[in-house]
Length: 413
Image (cartoon, rainbow, N blue to C red; front, side):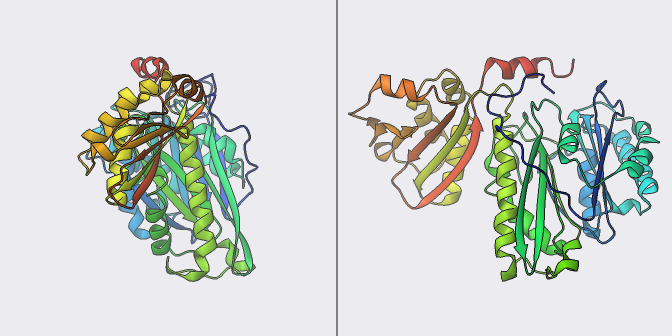
């Protein structure tokens, strides 16, 4: 966790309302850090539905494997998250740690181990001493209150420079329902059907299968459209919990994601995901520029996404942005290497609304001074027009600075 907050951090932090059926508590367990909170316990009322999406890494962490197995039950009573140690690439020891953590948490909350969900973030390859949770989780279960989401978000930070929270309120039937979310992530960010670590809570009465469908659809244009460095974590986990408490106030029970009564809820749910994913991009390790890349005129949306990601993950493009250089040649390179349909002579490129290349060559009205001034802005929008079809997509990234190298050069030390 950095002592210097990213200059791209949101200027305001939303007031996070309480959600019926959710209680939170944090503590210092000494997992890796000293004198800072590093464990979060979220306690849910009985009957809470759970859904999740996870990394597609072939080397997943032990908590990811645990959650995948327990997700089939569809119900959750508690979430335990620790920072400082990812419990990844830890073999049998890692699996034993998850089992012991779940056992301790189940006893503390008073539920079955199958209703416990786990997530860990931090260093890969170091054994996690789950005995450090013994006693701590019991105290947290007693102290948990319907809560301080900002403190919870701080407890799960690693190289993050600020806690990431978002909230939305919307009508569902006759009731007002709330959606709260938190996330962590600043490096090793190139999600694939999940995010780094993110947790969504709502009091809407949504069945597990419907919640799963909403989550799977919602991440596609939010968390899956963000990249910091092109590296997908072993630990990517996004869990959503729905307590159903709003049913007591007139919210209808939802069993299908296609239920038309969900229209406003889905919009608000996706807005929370989008807000959190943008905050992750804003907190990219060492970032000084938030970069939006839009590709239009592609053969398909899928093709546009691949080209946009090729640009967003290019170290040459990202370092040029860090140097405030509108180097469209590097964008051309990234388009060309993406392996998707592209015609050099139809290609147009703009930076912050200023067209620098047109029809496969430098724009005849190009003004170096104008573009250089535009590149000083903290937010950079790159638009690429391919002129081949109607496919369009957008992704978020950040620049690549010396600070990124410094942070990752000594991360384990």
